[in-house]
Length: 85
Ligand SMILES: [Zn+2]
Image: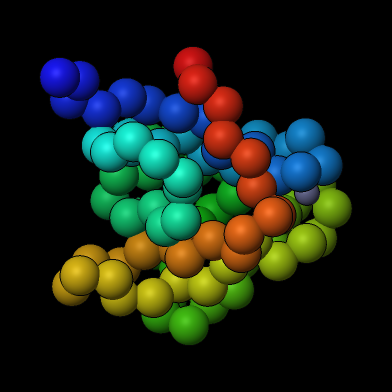
């Protein structure tokens, strides 16, 4: 079994948002901030309740929430795409 992999997360507009270590299969619904490997948008360190936007097109990406006790970006479905590296 795979231990997970680093994926690229992009906005629909093509802007690279961050690289993320994804440890399970399936759809990307949330991104734990501590698992973001390279942050191109400044998501890491944002306070809970923040709604980061794409630096390319200004579209809202989701909201920072505590999920399972850890700060995470809960993604707006349809605003991002994930790419295998
Ligand atoms: Zn965008």
